[in-house]
Amino acid sequence: MEAVPARAHVYIACVAIAALLCLLPPPGVRTPWWAVALLAALYAGCERVARSRFVGISHPAGTFYPVLLAGAFLLPAPAAALVVVPGALLSQAGRRPVALRRIWRAAQLALGVWAAATVHRLLGGRDAVAAGDVPYALGPAGAAVLAFCLVLALLDGGILAVAERVPLRRAWRGLVARSLAPIAVHGLAGLMMAVLWRSPYGPVAALLVLLPMCVSWWAFAQYHRERAAHQATIRALVQAVDIKDGYTRGHSERVGQASMMIARELGMADERVEVLRFAGILHDVGKLGVPTRLLRKDGPLTPEERRVIELHPEYGHEMVRGIGFLGEARAAVLHHHERLDGSGYPYGLVGRQIPESARVVAVADAFDAMTSTRSYSRARPVAVALAELERCAGSHFDPVMVAALVEAVGRTGWHPAVTADDEETRPARVPPPGTPLSSRPGAHR
Image (cartoon, rainbow, N blue to C red; front, side, top):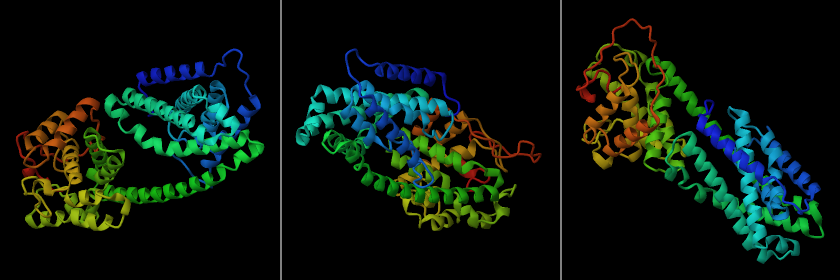
């Protein structure tokens, strides 16, 4: 997001202005500023601790939603929205542009908390909290949590549609369903905080609700650390392949990107999209077991050399089969050179016998191979590569996957990085457009 489109700046500015308007207190409403300051300091402090080296939570999700929702249950809507601002503006953004990300996060959460507090007040939730009537308080609190979740999903989908030009229907798909359950748990903790805050035990007792939540967040952070370690291992493997086969440097990352584009176009869940990205990144990891001289050979491969190179999917599968979280990515590593007509390798699978993940990666792999400079060919234009994929759909490639890539590239474009030294003096053999993929030099590399 370093180069944010102008339309995204406009969208974020509009959301920020709406959030500022929500912070304006209505006339005649008394604001307990001490409670606002205490909750704001608590939220900001908890966010800093959560992202410290001790806890290590690095994801941008609302780590301390219970504090924000407790504010929505206790305070007037503008005051509750104000609780968000210091913590969001001082939080770690992760990536550039930092200031824009902080403003977006603060505005988004402020609008969500304002909506939750407004719904809660209209349904009589504040009276139930003040009276300690927990069973009755659950209804307004549940409605407030739903409003909070809907606002966040609406704004998240909007930024996806505006910044990345994702179709609206797909941008909002699944956002509420994925976030409602965890936010509901946070809402229940926030309600417990609010009831205890209003009880004779006071704010100190309310803070005790955060202790079990902190333990669960710490455990969640350890899971993310373990996952980050796995991803670091994957990056090291890919870098080793890039070093060994210099002509395809960056190929794995681009195949991962193309696989992700196909998966999103097919409407797959985010979890599967991520798995397919890993599948694309790791599809050639088995080349670590192939002699370097074969990978860098300029001329045609002999039948024996080709048989050696065709072992790389099996080598790769052996390398990654012990990594549990990869799931169906392991099947893609093994079968990404299978073809629908049964002429592929290593097992000659036909049609639907080929795992879906492998059919996705096969299209992404061939597309990047055609649009990148190799030792045996120069890069071909994107339009020519897509036309070649369409020509081979049904025989080599799954037509559904090809159509998804064509649609995705047509909408967002494709800008591959250079994968070979442009100053190379060796002549490149560019096959004519009608040459089948299977007869190109190095087609199985």
